[in-house]
Length: 134
Image (cartoon, rainbow, N blue to C red):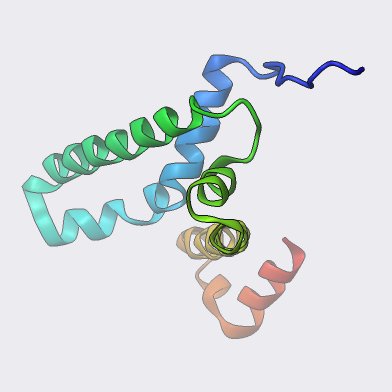
């Protein structure tokens, strides 16, 4: 009889924290500060702190749910166990689509920031070439 496979921690706490922050916060931290500052003015730092507190609650919820499972699977595993196979599959596809669109968002933000140094980068042809090369 074979032993039950267990998860072995192969990533450090600091690296895992960084990966989770990147996964939860995403690329909006690079694209939204100027928009928030423009709309809220001097209150924008307070808005960031309130948003950070709200995200901390979301992260705490995910950590609590993750501590209940010995298997790997993230939100897919929780949805499958809690709600059934179909919601689990839907969560897996949504997670995949979010990761895919996040990569596209980061690429578009790169072109927008590149335009600060090279204004022609926002032209229809040049921006497409830059995105294709990425």
